[in-house]
Image (cartoon, rainbow, N blue to C red; front, side, top):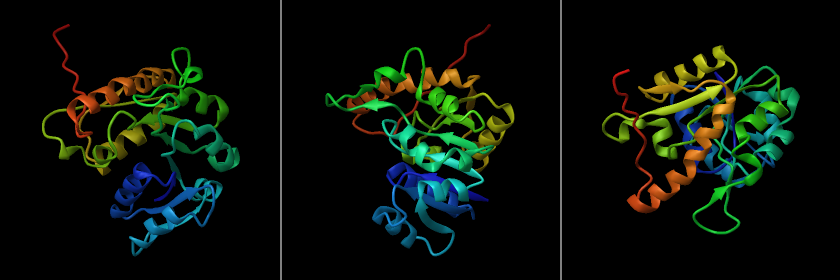
Length: 220
C-alpha cells in the first residue's frame, strides 16, 4: 500500500519506519521536498521510503497519517491540499498542545471543550475520512504496544464507520493493538485530546513515556 506520512518528527519517523517494515511504500512529507530530516530517514531504508512536500505525500498516499504538531496541523493540511486528501482516510495522531507558557503544556483554547483538532480537520475537509487515533500514547507504543506488558487500551473516533474499521485493522494487524475502543463520531476527539494534560503529568510523575491507560469495566 502507498502511505503518506505528514511530519518529520519522532512520530512520523517511527510510524513511517514501521509501515516500511510491513512492505508498504511510504512518502514522508514536509514543507520542502528536500527536508534534511526526511532525507536522513529515507537513507535509513533501502527500499520503500521516499520524501516530498506535504502536497506530494498527500497525493502519493492511499492513506495519510498526520504526524505534525497540533499547532500547525491545519496549516500543514492546507499545504497538502484538499484535492489530495479528497476521499482518503486521514489518521490524525496530532494533539493541540500549547507550549507558549512553558511546561506542562495546556490545550490550545480555541481547540478544546466545545471543539477539537480532529473536528476542525473534519470540518475543513468534509470529503476526507478523518479518524483520530494513537494520540494518547508515545511513539514507541504506537507501533509496538507489546513493549508495555499487561493489558492496555487505545481509543479511536471518526464519522465514517468503514474508515474506522480499516484503521482498526491497521492498528491490530500491523501495529499489534489488542484493545481498540471506538468512542463514536469525531466529536469524541474532544475527550481523547483532553487526555493529554493528564498524560503529560503522568510522564513527569513516572519519569518515562512508556505507560498507557487501561479501562476496567464492572458488571452492568
